[in-house]
Length: 99
Image 1 (cartoon, rainbow, N blue to C red):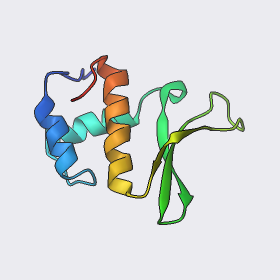
Image 2: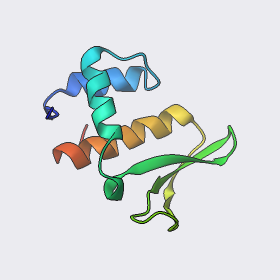
Image 3: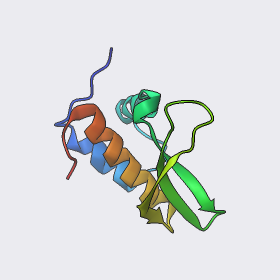
Image 4: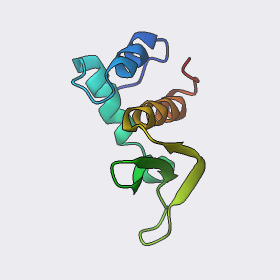
């Protein structure tokens, strides 16, 4: 299985420049791996006001349970939400807080 190299800050910088892609092959592999994390660890972006506001939330462990919303992680810029969730997932996968 592919393991993320936590020293690859160049991938974090590339994501920051263009969170919506397209991404290099190396970054695309990392982004896809982070998106496929186990469900109990998965943090997602939820549109709380269509095209205006996005909030990060934790997926429930069981289907039908409520999501846990993070009231301190509300964004009026979708790209900012993407950058934040990338950093959260990066840390969860590598144990290293991105700068």
